[in-house]
Image (cartoon, rainbow, N blue to C red; front, side, top):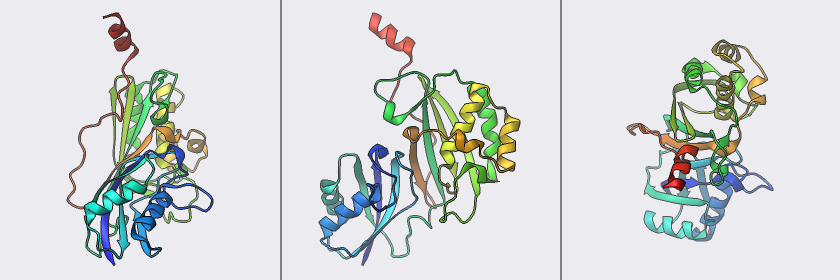
Length: 270
């Protein structure tokens, strides 16, 4: 068996998440089906660095593949891509040592969430449109409560694969870009729906319906409130999976530009 490290991207709107499920279309399932066609075998193992929920996208997911083949990495990339639907794409295939494990060797993960502060005709699949005005300063202040090693039990749902609800959140960064509010969350690993619930709570702070002290209470005492405030999956992207020696992203850029209403009207008049 040869082991390969695979970098890939996908638009998750049509899928019931990453992980293979019975009677559901998933990203991992599509990839395994394409690989079985290319390698003409059922004997392969394909595992991602992490799972994404239904409707969530990935800018750079990482996986490892074990398969018996004489094909080189670039040929594998081209042949598997030829079998994949247009909303899943393998970016790069590399030979990897047998000891490499996409999930266990990851040191951190980065997620990007996009909130649109205006209705848009083009970005519906990639944003959460919030009609209310958001106080971004208050959201930044509240986001500091999540930083560090925290037990985020209230921000996830029961999942037998999650043995601990303690997460190291390295940073939460926000930036306004046109009418988009970009939120990057970097952590050791992530629990089911955690990022969407953190974003939902921060949005409630931005609306003025919750303050930083209430956020602290949700972190330190079990509560069902974050579940009620869960942000939709459309705005969420797995941005990067980091391994030892990888350089961290610095720039925070939108997936697609959504200009301000003023800019668009000015352009129309010119």
